[in-house]
Structures are given as structure tokens and as C-alpha cells.
Length: 78
Image (cartoon, rainbow, N blue to C red; front, side):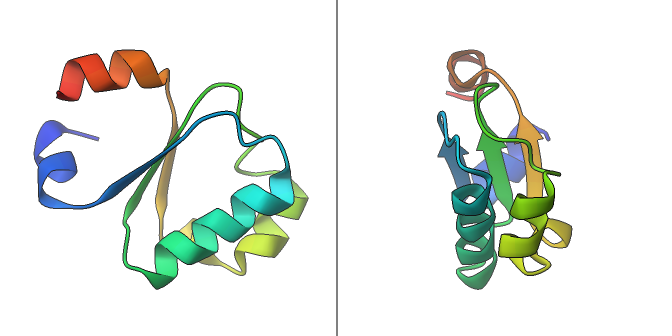
């Protein structure tokens, strides 16, 4: 994920979403609203947890999801 992709699109930053079902729902909502990038903190639930996959209803295939330290990400981008 480079700076140009971040500046030209909406990006959702998630911090410590621990329930895999909630994470999947957030991915599904991001997909619905056309948010192409989701950055998760290292303490978030696993993006590939079966419950996340099921609750995302396939959105995990369309939304680019990354795990990264959010403070480092924000310092690098902003």
C-alpha cells in the first residue's frame, strides 16, 4: 500500500477490533460504501478467521486489508 493509494481513496483504520464477527461486518460495510482499504492494528482479530470470512459475505476478497501498527502508519502517511 503506497501513499498515492491512501491519498486517492478512503482508508479505514481499525484499532483493537477483537470479535471476528464484528471485523467481518466492518469489512462488509466498507465494501458497501466503496472503501477499498482497511488497515487493522496488530491487536485486531485475524482477517482470515472463519467467522470473519463468513460475516464479511465475500467482502474480504474486494477490500484490501492489512495489519500494521497504526502509529507508524500515521507517521509515515501524514
